[in-house]
Length: 118
Length: 112
Image (cartoon, rainbow over all chains, first blue to last red; front, side):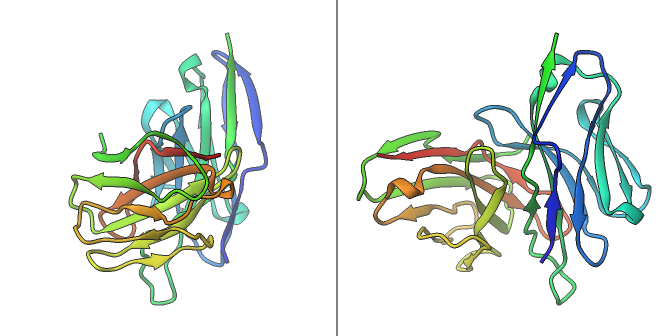
């Protein structure tokens, strides 16, 4: 079964500093990859996704992520963090079932809580 | 902005009560999902639906049940709530495979 690992449970950065959140997945082929953000008491909002093509994908709010097949990674980055970026970030994968189609099920990592210091 | 709504947002209820968590979406999505999220933990899929009259259990065993009588509505029911059911429940929908899921704001359930 596929799995997603986010090694950092909690990260603290200063406002204006750069950010990288790590995500590794375990799956035999390339899954579809997503990053979601969850603010306290809220649902999940999609930041970006990777299905195929260019391995560097741009998302909303100035985030980007790079897919590295050799490392089975999909790390999220932002060059300059804003205080409003404080939230919990989830990496997720979607894999096709044995029939080659996907019913859209997402497997999530444990999440990384981002704290931003002024 | 996604149009998927969950009610109630917060619910505190006594042990043994029957509860229904509501989820509705106005996007016409065929696929809908329920995820359970404990504090500090990842989300786990507990139910999903391909469309009307289709429901399946997810990866995480759950005592809850779901129904899908209308495309836009996917309620989750607990016949007899227990403290172990205390969690956050997130509903989501997607238009099909290979697309992102849109999430509701969640229902935080506390069973006392």
